[in-house]
Amino acid sequence: MNRATGAFAILALVLSVLGFGLTVPGREARADAQEAAVVTQPTPPNGQPAPPPIRPQVPLPVQDVLQSGVLVVVSKASQRMHVFKDGERWGSSPVSTGKRGHSTPAGVFPILQKRVFHRSNIYSNAPMPYMQRLTWRGIAIHAGHVPGYPASHGCIRLPRRFAKALFDLTRADRTTVVVTNAPLRSEQGAVTLALNSQAPAVSPLQQPVVDLAALAPNAPVQTIQLAAALSPGEAESHWRGVVAIHPELASFRKAVVPAVVGQRRYWRLRATAPGAHAVCGALRRSGQDCFNVI
Figure 1 (tube, rainbow, N blue to C red):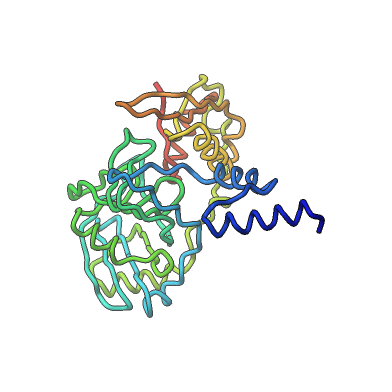
Figure 2: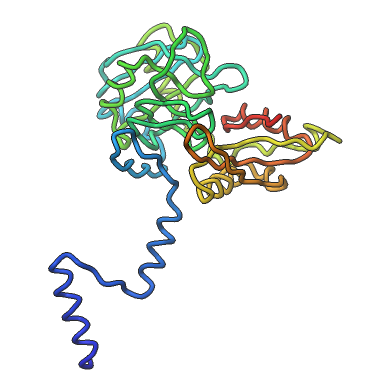
């Protein structure tokens, strides 16, 4: 070590003890790249920074969470949720799942992200209190209006008090959510159905590819909207994720359009192609957020 290098090392040590830091060549660039890779999160109303998103994971086997953890079973036919903690009944509640054209996907899901305060990035900044994300395509459990029938855009709505209690109960690493199309007439029936639903939800990369030519041959050029992001970078990241799940969108012409709603700026992620509206309908049926741009 030469004299200059030794002096730099001593200075860095002193500054680190005092709470300062020196930039190491290459480290700042890596940090910028890592920060750019994280999806932008809105700041909650209390002004505290939003917690980082929970990374994707595979749902735990139902038998594991019945022994130690939380099992949530949702019946779309019965519009009801049953919750079990460590194998014992914890509670049940009416729900409101996705309405026609915005069906809530059935399957076995983990909890990917939890946030007390959240707003929809695609549906007019709609509030989603006590949000527990099930998919990265916009499906979540959250507090909302429960009219007694399917009325959401794909999410699972709960009465606010029950949504808060469930939010406090669950842990992302010890919770499995089963969503079924079948009716449930008893809590035991919910457990039995969950145990028979061991296969996880279909992997996004296994989703069937939509045949554009079959859906809309010689169709007019149309535009659809896939998200309203909080930054251009988030819109680009969302686009890459959607194309990875639905490769047929790679042939669409993408556009990120700035817009101001109230006093907040958004970047609308849109895509244009012949017959795009028909494709949007197919995307919604698969659980992907999408709507037609008139």
